[in-house]
Length: 217
Image 1 (cartoon, rainbow, N blue to C red):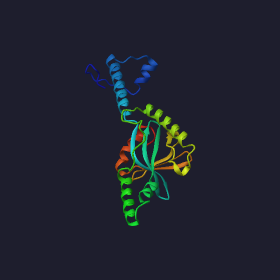
Image 2 (cartoon, rainbow, N blue to C red; image 1 turned 30 degrees about the horizontal axis):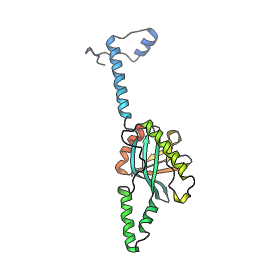
Image 3 (cartoon, rainbow, N blue to C red; image 1 turned 135 degrees about the horizontal axis):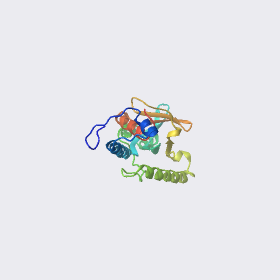
Image 4 (cartoon, rainbow, N blue to C red; image 1 turned 135 degrees about the vertical axis):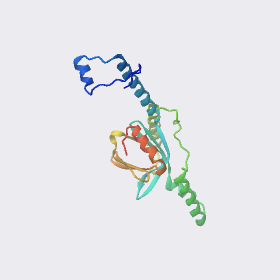
């Protein structure tokens, strides 16, 4: 390594043993350079971690018979991921077609389907998130929000409500994989979870999962 004094220092791979067991003391320039490297690594790590949480909008979730049921926001945080369902995809298409003549209804449903696939046909209700919210603050607010929704929906009929948001921690996840087309799948909480991220966002998802410690796919 190059020291602060401009000199280049080298040592055998047993340098740690010489220091720990025999009391060897390297030149001061080596000590200062090692401290500088540690500070640089700490700065780099804190910079890398600033990206969490990461939000993926309009993620389609929970595949039944090859068809996705819900769309919503997926958040990748350190050690956990959260999915907030926003719409029932089938219900939204049916609502559009309910009061239209058959021929027009077919066109309307096709239009809604394209919007659902490409841009997302909903307004997010996760109002506590923005790009300045840190990882711990987001997780705290997310759990408060989930508890609030559970209380509100406790007395509602099952068919009249969206599922409560999903929270999955890293220790629950197994068999995680990311398909060539951008579908994230894994087993957790006695169920199989499928999130259709899409090919365009596949690389961003892979990087977020790795940064969050959720695994490499």
